[in-house]
Image (cartoon, rainbow over the protein chains, first blue to last red):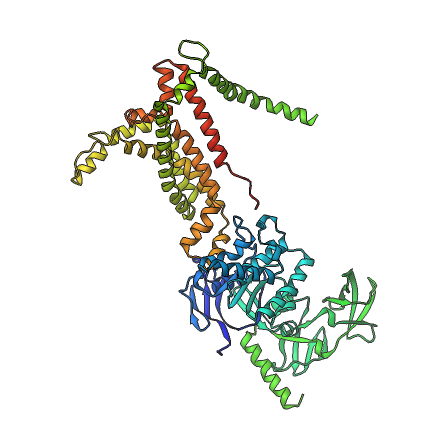
Length: 370
Length: 266
């Protein structure tokens, strides 16, 4: 734990009545001033983490610290965090100004101060001219900004965002991704962003927590999560993947699809059963002779930036390829990939073991002068 | 073609309204201009603006206001607690069931409870306070009226509270508001429409209560409703009765107008 830690969960479990735990013995730390994303399918427990931080639900077990202070018994209205809710939850009986001013009025600030701060917050989200509008007169994107202004006007140390972009159309959503990231940089506070959209998570975050079934599956910077998924769930959930059963013959050599391939992974037991991930964009289409794999093209979709080609090799494994080159359905093609494109996953490996293995491997890399 | 068949469906409704709403009102207006000897005159309206009737109007208003206020004070917290219970619709049903019982029966039941040898006085005796005159007082009148109107007030408030999106409460807490502030600044304003309809369905009938005034209040409380009844059935002065009725209709229309739900987005 360092001084830059702002939120700390210690073995936190959340359980409703006698149902299975929504959040199962979760521990993590979050640093000040970073953009965190909690990513996972619906019902995985990501929103529960958010509500535990904001204080809207209480933990069944475990300890929650904000700023090194145990906050398990601190009610939501006494915590220095604010939330942007999924449906914005803007008060329909108040206009834009009064919605933003709500938190300040509760704190009984002077009218002049309220006026100044609200105007500043609205300017921050580019809504200066909208003070006197009713909420019902605002569009989806504008409501989103009002909700952000209402939260940041209270100068929270942590801003929690609960799938705030899910109600917007694609174009606006992409725009807001940039804006949110920019906003976080300007404010310099911690953002905890909840989403089920992996592209959103990869684009915006300093660090991603991938969550499934009440447990954190993997945490790390976006590129690590994408390039080194810990298990089948993460590999499948983040981006598209070709996942295939294989065997780690020895360090740097993996066998799958009946062939041996050079790879960059190590630290496995000899002949250990593993799963192998190759991203569709790392597969290159070439002639049958040059390719590592021979695949018969089954279908092809035009995706705009690339073609998505689906085919089967002679052992019946399905391969998805993203390529700017077109293939012909029914024809046999070769697939080529670099050793770096192969990612080997140990079955049932926990996050700690995974990190330890990667670290050992990094140290060795340094010794070898790589 | 389609609009014509739709108009066809309207016929029963229009007939009903014409026969049982419009015609009676027109008849009342007509009779209000007929004096006790059957001649056309404005004497009834002159009489209405004499202190006797003005005082009666004021006291009607005062009692209706008291009844509405006490009903609201009891009904809002009850409805609020109901929405928090597990089997809220069952509880709501239990609260509404008494309103299915005839008003007269309930009034007679209270005669028994509040009478000199009734349950209420027996309890006062037990606590050493001694027998009191409970029946035929303002207290008993308002108590029984409130009891009768409570279900009508709870229903619209319960519906408004039940429809209230709980994230608004979360948002308010998140922004630093205590439970009390959240209640007054978020929950109450967002359920005010339910409160308004509840007040309407209580205040307007309370203004013209007449049976309870005789049975429970022993004719010590004379409201406009009582006066209408007396003129039609006792003094046979239909003209004066109609005039008071006309004023009741006007007052109700005004109240409906001011407590009406204005359209609001979202």
